[in-house]
Image (cartoon, rainbow over the protein chains, first blue to last red):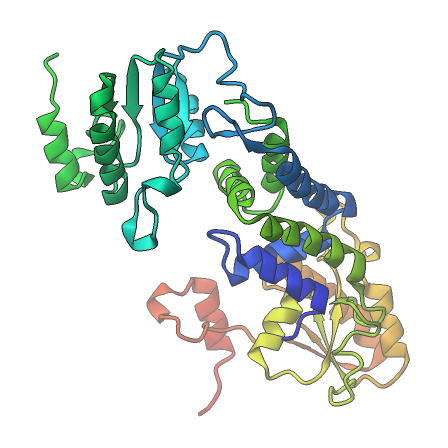
Length: 198
Length: 198
């Protein structure tokens, strides 16, 4: 089946999106052609506007349309605690939990030597800069518990040691609501290791 | 979590797409912000271009960028057999099978009185018009085997009866590769009913 050229192009572009395969791209493209024209054009405009008006906060590196971002410029947030995350989406996840009142630092990646990502590719210099300004009491390393996330946390822990700032890592254990039966061995052994008296 | 406004707007627009929930919309939006700018803008342009340059074929009603469409204007296709389908995506599915050499007629929906879709909302007049031109020997009703698809096929069968054109319906039976054990009762009884000597 040869699609009309503009439709084929749209399907190709949609297929580049993460998690969107051929079938989904086709379904979305047909939807965009059948939807009211203003709806399709609003999406096109939203993509352009988001690219034009969104940038990285000069302080924390999160996406923002004002600089510093709304979190960094919020007087109620504790600038003494920096939570270091891999990506902007991690800020969203932690903010959703609603219990963290410090500020963030987005690395924009994890150390991954095989992919050519060394410390210079991450926003580590910017983190050291923030720490040298002296106000910071604690750095929470909230990278993923994957091999790369762990390696990045370990690297940062060593790097920050001479600065005499408290460095912590998110707790490991069972996800809330999870059945023990379904948890993997590593998670169970970490949950046992980190057990607390109640 | 309050997103920067342009990002919030992009997430909202992505959420309107079929099968895209909040999490997926957020993931796609973050991807579009992190991707090379030309990639995001190419998608925005592809949406606009597809809307501007794609329209319905004046003969069959399928999406096209030339009129009549590439199928209707293909001299090798048999204009004597019209396959009537619900949506443009059904043309894609049948073309993918690669064995149909006739032409199509896209109804752009099915009869659905509860949703206010009567015969006048479908491209039925256009179908009658094509039949009156006299060249057509057979109409294959390839609507879905859902309640609405069946009702639409039945409606069309009655409507076309006086025109003395052969009217057929796609065969019912087991999907190829399916295990009998897993087929539903209705499919099995239709497969038995339509059994063929081998």
